Length: 77
Image 1 (cartoon, rainbow, N blue to C red):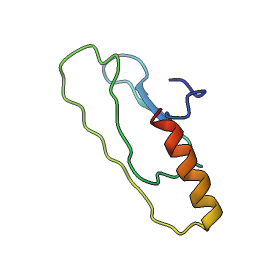
Image 2: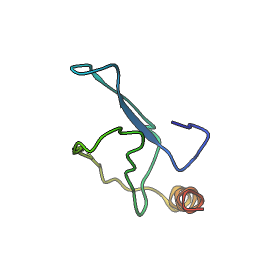
Image 3: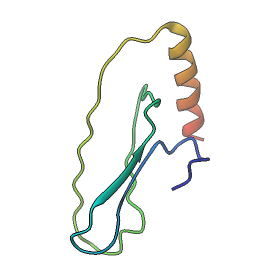
């Protein structure tokens, strides 16, 4: 979980052992313009993982679109 890495915009983890609650942090200002990828690290086992992504579609002006395309481009470096 590296908030200084702009390719990361959400994190989730299991706080504790079995039966513990799931904790999450999501950047509310992130706009996914093109692709979004999920990476599971340090899972420590071969158990399957489930996830659900909820997205909202909304209009942005040209300046916002350009800024988010630039941010997205730097994420793939």
